[in-house]
Length: 203
Image (cartoon, rainbow, N blue to C red; front, side, top):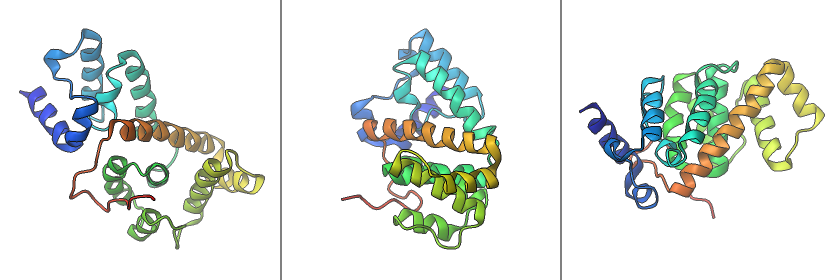
């Protein structure tokens, strides 16, 4: 029963398009390796196979390794949750990954990110009114993607705001959610039509 409810919930969240490319794996159709990874994810802090996990289960060893990295990034990072979730939203906006935005927008607000900052980001603007640490995260993440490196000033501001471990964890959250965004976009996982603050379509 628990698995049935879970599968139905994931299907409702991911929509028909995702099912066309990567049909939802029913528990009884999973291989033992897939079932073991699914159980590990379900019993961890996420308690859900939403987002990229149904897709990743096609490669269960990869799925297991990736979900463990993601668990650190989501729940154990040295970055404060407000900044970690902000970095995830920056990544979602970069990729126009609407499911990722839908999933993390409310988490960012709960962690203390101002609604106005998220709204500016959704519209492709450099957010106004950012705190110094938020500006350091935004500048680092956007410059790294734009230039494929960061300059001394940007690095120095991030290091001053976050410390060395924080800079490494900022790189990690950006890279991990690049992977998540690519997965979601290839699998065509949409946000629900009533999802929070949907991203505009890119030209």
